[in-house]
Amino acid sequence: MNTVLKDKRLNWQDYLSFPCDERWEIIDGSPFAMAPAPSVPHQRLIRDLTCKLSDFLGKSGKCELFVSPCDVKLSETDIVQPDLFVVCDKNKIKATHIDGAPDLVVEVISPNSISFDRFKKMLLYAKFGVREYWIVTPEPALIEVFSLDGETFRVHGVFDHNSVLTSARFKALKLKLNFFAKAELHS
Image (cartoon, rainbow, N blue to C red):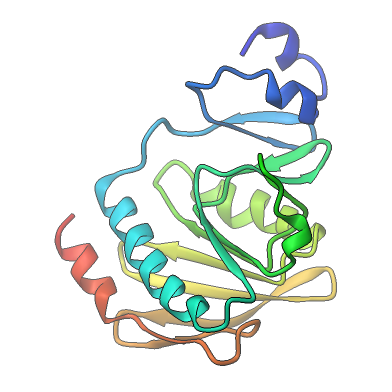
């Protein structure tokens, strides 16, 4: 990204001009570089969660699961690429991006993204009305599920590899996390 863009408040049009071989997010007009490639354990967790959520969502056909990289335009100055997310409003799904808040966002924590995902993104997702936010910690294997309550998230539950994850948004979802320990063992 050129230095002229770094010195101004960025928007969707600026974002579209970024180099295709780089991954960026914009939060409140400020650019944030994303790591070029996540670790293998990170990708295993995304793969396994994708399979489990796909199986669950495939039964209803009402909501659609997306995997990064896929742009989510929350506003003109807030564009993110969550690891996984679910959209239930088909009108938000555009040919090039998602226009508006997903119903569920899942972020798998990397060592360099802990505070970013846990604080900055959590506040952003709450501000724009993401109904449920999962923070996945690979080691120790843990998934924290947060449910939107007004303008902030509240803890719905904390689940480890011995647990069955439940969702506040998707009441019928009962996700056995026994695969979680296996993903961790291969790291």
